[in-house]
Image (tube, rainbow over all chains, first blue to last red; front, top):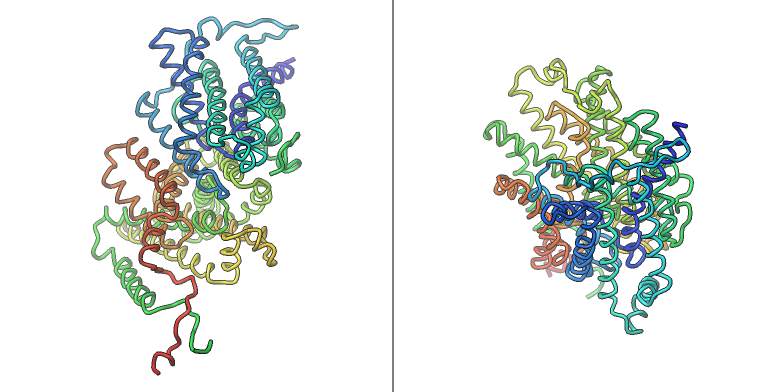
Length: 287
Length: 342
């Protein structure tokens, strides 16, 4: 029963990792950009949530209505102001610019909020649980998992059922021809980054309710998201959810064996999958 | 004019003069214990170690296209191997540094086989995962202090040299030697056949491959050599610090972020770039250290601006303007000497 519980908790934790990964996957799918600052943007989302809850007295879930648009606007401006200039054949500029961005965000957070760990107070939501066939399941992890499914379903819908999604896919397939067909790729990329950072904002808030956070944890969140993307297969959003779940389960089972093994078990599982299936379990994009 | 009226050469009177000046500077630096104070020597020692790390990262990213954000894996690994080999292996520290290099190359083989499956930017994050695996693994080794780390026993420190001044001089010279050896190794490697292959890959991977260059093998060799030398530098770094912990040994900020900024600011893909970058980095650090986190934000912003506006760095700007090369790598066509006489 203990192991079934670990399996269940790990699966639910995977929902959070899928949220970390979804933005990363989206950006890579549309413009082949790997954003090293992604983890720090998640943490930025958490801190914005914290500010909104403390200043306006909102419940963290309600803070989403402020933080999500704020991050989306930030994403659009970031993309059009800086990141569009880095896109091209050479992989160095986007990598190094987002790396610089990561250091700037991290230290700006340190300067503003100090290095002390913070946590958002979500009241009863944090401790509420339902019992399920002898297992006690937290409402918050279930809610996070449900949000992850909803986010991925929405992204999937946008991608394949809307004009915006068609523009994303067209630009992804061939930028020049998309441009000839009247799409402004700079604007499209800006919208893609806005959408990605909106998801990132949700990920940040869910992270901030679940655990305490400080400015230095961005790198670790980036790695979890990245591992989920690679395990699931590049460009496959539902695969990303599976990747997140595999990672979450590996971590909870690792922690069950020895608390020091939690993160290590996740990383090792990732490396094993990389060794056996280098393109991930369900690859869409060959790269 | 016939083709024999021209010669193709790498060196020029200018590069020969630079070589002489470089040699003089080196002699002055070797003699530093006789003219520099203790604090200055410490700072210079640290500068040389960063110069070595930056030159190695530049070889990987600037020439082989292997952009790693996980070189702290080898810095930390080398540091821990120094502790393990001296404490449990009973080796003298200087021998342990070499041993750390050999072990670094060995561990890099399976690592490379795994992460070479990732392309481009995903390779970069993959290297970070490896560094995290190293950090978490060493945190589990209780014999080396686990998560809180351990100190180098006094007996081992004393075995370096009996007096404190002697130890400080030795570690200064080791740091200087590491920078000189790394830069010389990178220079000679780039002038060799392998280096030519590497330069071809840097300029156009597809064309290089179609000319029969084994791209995978060339990158693999660069990765192993860099891992070995980075591990040795790591061993040296923690021989100076005398204390190691997983967080310090595998710090992404200390051993990768700063190194990347140095190379980007100086000029990626040139030997001169890391040298200029290191000098600027230390000058900025000494001037702005009081600002703390703001200093790091400034550094990040400078790196972004340089990457966007002058992707070849400061050395690239200088070279574009004056057509200079301190380390002669490229060939030039000149009128031959007999022609100048006549």
